[in-house]
Length: 312
Image (cartoon, rainbow, N blue to C red; front, side, top):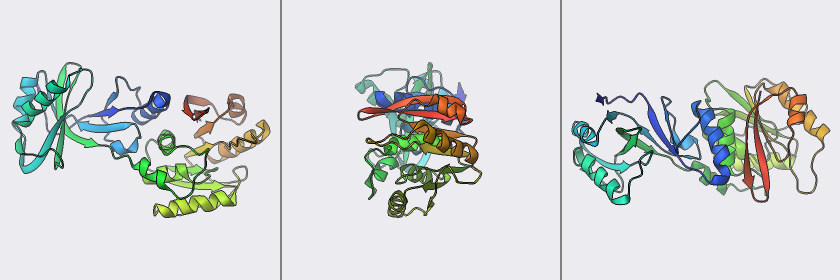
């Protein structure tokens, strides 16, 4: 039996729609450095669950036991000094019906020295079984901040959804510390908003003055700094750790392969790593621009599919 109050790893529970599964898996393996399985990830990284649009919660693995009886014994040592709390069952490997889940919550909760509060507890604990081992610890639920960003004043019909934009920002910059990023075709700023909300140091450019104006309005709406300027990706200069580019797409006119190549060569001058979003297969153009595709996925929106390409 292992007993500790200091977590050395964390349990992350995630969920996604089937059409976004590939994007979810790409984001999570970028964030955690491992492929997710069975709707959860165990990692020693302490990540804010609100970072990802797919993570539901994080449970600190503070108490571990071989049986539920041993876990109950450990829960008896938790003294919250009168603070309110709630225990929730977290589904992982073991499928447990509703009544048994509530019974397990009560069995553990009765042992914790504190005041049970079902609606607004000061402490939330998660209980789960992983690989035959029972675990218990502080649980932090994700806040869907990206949904709030849907309420921006300016919109493009073909812009990325806030969920996809947030995932793409995480794929480009899994660890924001000391990283400088650029979105050289930022449009109305969907990626910029998600990146800035996660503490990523990013700037944006667009060749279209109307798009830049719209991006500034959106950033100002969320009280974010004006990090947008007019600029052509083909002529921008600078040194960045990562670039994110959603290749221009228009229902009436698609840019030529030559224009795509010029744009990607511009990106390559700016950063050695890029996440490229495209509605077309442009592997040859990516290669000709000096990039190599390291990972990829597809994500659907409406009647067309986008490719997310991780390049270096």
